[in-house]
Image 1 (cartoon, rainbow, N blue to C red):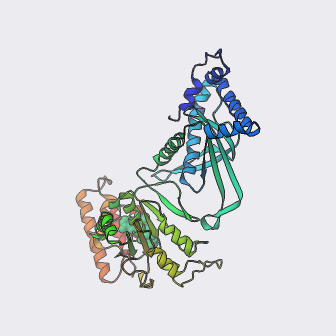
Image 2 (image 1 turned 90 degrees about the vertical axis):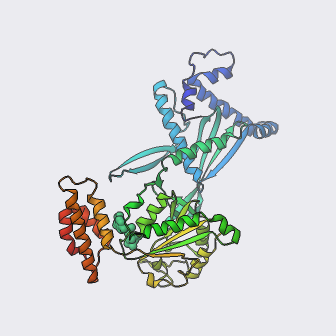
Image 3 (image 1 turned 60 degrees about the vertical axis):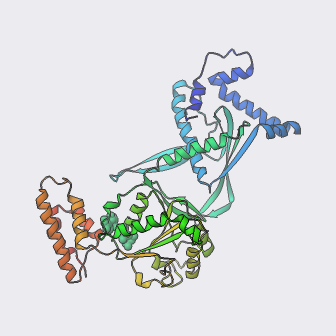
Length: 460
Ligand SMILES: Nc1ncnc2c1ncn2[C@@H]1O[C@H](COP(=O)(O)OP(=O)(O)OP(=O)(O)O)[C@@H](O)[C@H]1O
Ligand SMILES: [Mg+2]
């Protein structure tokens, strides 16, 4: 039943308050329904608690089904959001029919959401979700009790050492219908996933679990990352071939995993390309920070073998983590991931499980050869500063396609040629410019100035 279910029930026949039995009276009257329903449930629970053992056992056996969801499970957030969504939908209906909102509680929590739009603007809105405490709602004709509890003593390690309180919601349905829970959870999941379709989801490690980080982002078209001709295709083809050979690996008992290393100077498009590639294959990204506080070999192992399905594990600046074997942060904290622990973690993969690892570095020469041997890194690619062709393509992407009225296509062509020649000329002298620097330069300038002013961008 959709979100409007309760609204329907609440606005149903207001006229039949003269029903013969209390039950039908309670059932039909919108003003009393919720309250008496509550009373009824309360009474039933009361009887169950203090009444005869027989009654309690019977009720528990025959009438009550419970489900516990804890906050390490993704269903936890989906469920709270789903409840809030229903509450909103019903409150809108309720304000018209003047019946009470469905959340039988004054204990609410706020969840702040920030929505970023592609043009860079953003808006903040609040969603009121059921806070810790007891709440009631009716789902497909059955009353449900929701208990949200927070355990303050047992904390689990969160991001950057932050403690996250352990929370559970316990749903108890006053119904024998066990199928209600799967239906309800499926509705909650669909609602939760709605905003993610066509978007890139980035997960970060949260204790020993992966959790979506921030709102799903808009996918970046893969063509918008301009690499050396053939490079993007080479990586993409390799990955697709790997994805098509699951059975081949299984038949030979080879762990089904593939590792990629993209190396090169800053701002050449490594991160952008990996994100665009993930987006084009509808994969998520699991961002792993090896220097994270609290991350030890055992946790790393767990994280690497428990990444969500259809995701790339991405380790950025992999050289930094093991430069000095033991990484020390500014405040003297030492990362407890060891190099050998890391190697073991990337080797150890539960057979049959797919694992795709991407690593990036600006200093491939600092990497231990043990890390980049085949099996750990299967494809290593240099993503370098702008080549003449890349500069030209980026220029065309920026100013082409009729985006500039005051410049003719033929003049744009000439300008693009000029830029190509400038980059080629500079390369002969051992100078180059990053794609990121070119992008910034193009954003600040009109096409003619962009080319004439490009001479100063190059560095040895
Ligand atoms: N090859 C490219 N094509 C298009 N845009 C690029 C390219 N390289 C870099 N950029 C732009 O420059 C910015 C930085 O790129 P990105 O973060 O992908 O670089 P990176 O190689 O990961 O750098 P770092 O090594 O510093 O992490 C992004 O905004 C991106 O749009
Ligand atoms: Mg990067």
